[in-house]
Amino acid sequence: MAGFVVTPDGIVAAPVHVNGSHMSEFFTTEALSALLQVIMIDLVLAGDNAIVIGLAAAGLPKEQRAKAILIGIIAATVLRIGFAAATTQLLQIVGLLLAGGILLLWVCWKMWRELRTSHTEEIQGEEALEGRDLDQDGKIAGSAPRKTFAQAAWQIVIADVSMSLDNVLAVAGAAREHPNVLIFGLILSIALMGVAASFIARLLQKHRWIAYVGLVIILYVSVEMIYRGTLEVWPLVNGG
Image 1 (cartoon, one colour):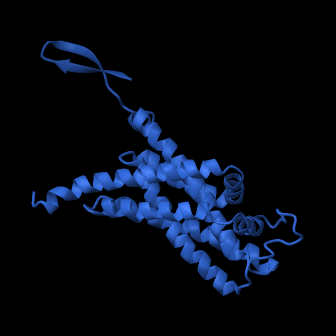
Image 2 (tube, helix red, strand yellow; image 1 turned 30 degrees about the horizontal axis):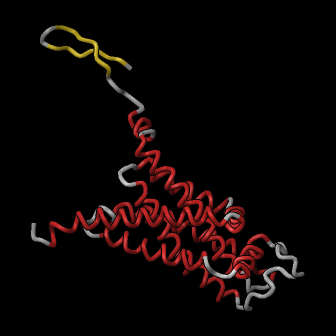
Image 3 (tube, one colour; image 1 turned 120 degrees about the vertical axis):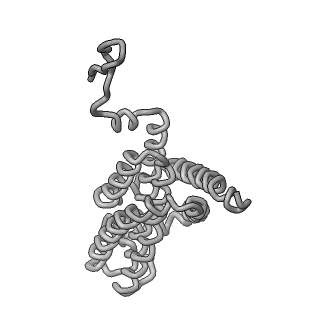
């Protein structure tokens, strides 16, 4: 929208941006690159979280399984909202970006190990999530070790705390100085956990390369966070 600016020489027409500045920032090359990273991170970590919840619930009787999975998904959603509010503020503190990058590096190692776990274990988790006999062995999550509801619920809560923090850190690291991308990433993360978790878990199981691409992106984000965090801390270490 064009407006007029009064100068000593007279009235000169000049463009004045009233609205849409935030939207234009959203479509810069850097913001779009961050957005793609965030979407990939959300997809991989939502599927990963879903499999972990399914594995924890797999050892329960059928009538308790759905209840445990629902508790797990609700807890993951609430934790993501809570961590998002805290993490965006905490990453402003000098030194915590470096710490976050190191923590995310550990997440990469954990994901790498999980991607190499046995196919049978993951099938048990997916069967528990979907309530279907995917491997046609006549049982749903049949070979998973038996456990009480309290044990399963505790395992799910512990996994949710860890993975929700991982997710928020990775999204905040990838979004960098783009608050709109950060907000979108966190909303998408919550939506995926609530609506499409079991579908994504099955997709990642069927197409392993998607999970490996996500792992590479999270590794890149963690290395960049460590690099930027080191640049922040270095002057303090040298007394500058």
